[in-house]
Length: 340
Image (cartoon, rainbow, N blue to C red; front, side, top):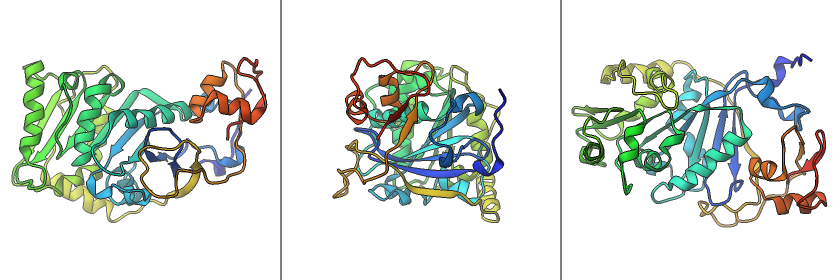
């Protein structure tokens, strides 16, 4: 059977997720053009992955200036802002918000688990890019979960990991300005030296020191198309591609080019508010779920209660209570289950 969908149901947009994943961060998910099916078709009588080809995923980790409990802050600079400025990015974007302190790799990973379970992601093409505090987060996440990542870029950061040996397993581009007074270039050099102790040849590392460049200027890398071209050159397990270079002139020109064209994006700021309390949320009064109409999921072939619970950031016990069924209940294809 061939399924035809009206072009009106496809669009690029940005959705917020608050208190959806337990012990994780609140986050944005950007959906690129031509892959999103509108909420008017939810629940769907078919598997989205059967009609939408999987796309790459870029994980963006922001710096300290964007920390807090207001997700709108995460759009002030970086990958999401570059898209709003007109960057053509044919990939999903996961942009969590860190309320304060160092990024925790386990919380980032729970956000990633949720997105992979709910969107058609090409799991061989997951990338991480972060700056300043987010540069630290990129290094620390990669040190623990390098097996999930195809390539990464750490800008003006450093690292707090117990071991950096895993970084040698993934194509990694570290960029730092030599005139950075907020996070000294020595922080990145420390990471590189630690990687060399594990493997002196650092086979998958590119380390670029931008002479005379301060802390803020390298943020323009987010607006440079070749940044993402380099990332997308890699699939999980690939060796580093060294056929790319970065110049201050390229970074300057890229930002000014994007300023001349803006990309309209539909922003949904309250589409997903769950009852799982995020330990990363420090704002008062957000521990309770916002009342919403029930959301229904249509059971597909191969589904189980545990798979459905994981996909929707809930538990088997809650699914059973919502639907008045037992944990060992047999599911049938086409059956409708309340998931919140």
